[in-house]
Length: 202
Image (cartoon, rainbow, N blue to C red; front, side):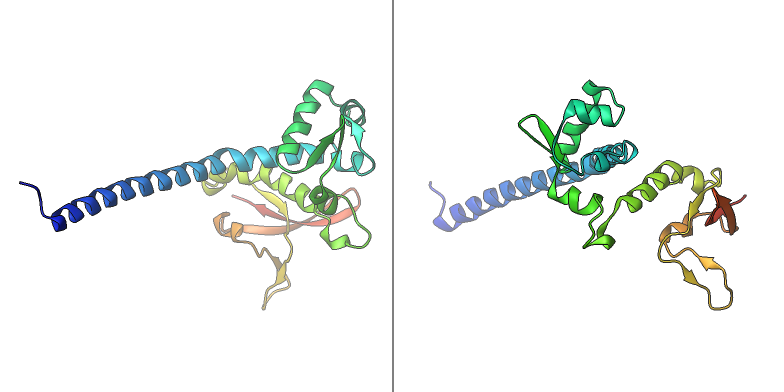
C-alpha cells in the first residue's frame, strides 16, 4: 500500500530538514575552524612579518621608486634569499607589491607607514613600534603577568587621563585590570628624554 500524499510530504520535509541541519552544522564547524586558525596563525604571522618590516626599516627603504629585491636586501643588510621570502609574505598580507622583478609598497602601506605631509596624523609606524614592544614584553607574557611572575614596564598609552583627586597619570586601557594591584608610575630618563613608565612591582 502506498503512503498518503500528506505522509510523503512530511517525510520529504523531515529528510530535507535533517540535511539542512547537517549542512548548517558543517558550515558552522568550518566557520569555527576558520576563526580558530585566525586566532592561532593569522594574527601572529601577519604582525610578525610587519614587526620584521619595522625592524628592518623597510618602509623607509621602499618609500621611493620600486627596487629589486637584491637592492632592498642590501639596504636592509639582509640575506637576499631569506629577504625575498619576507617580501612575499608581506605581499600576501597587503604590504608589498611585485611587478617586473621590482618591489614597492601598496597604497595602504604607503598611506599608513610612510610619512605624508598632508596627513601627518595617519602615520602609524610609531604605533606599530609601540605594539611591537608590548608584544615582546607583555602580550606574549600575559600568563606570567597574571601569575605575578612578570614585571611589566611600558610607556603610558594614549590617551592618559588625570585622576580627580591626584595629579598622577593613570593608564586608560583595559590591560591595567590584569596587572598587579600595586602598580606605580615611575619617571625615568632615557638618553636625555623623560618618559612616564608603569612598573608592576611585586
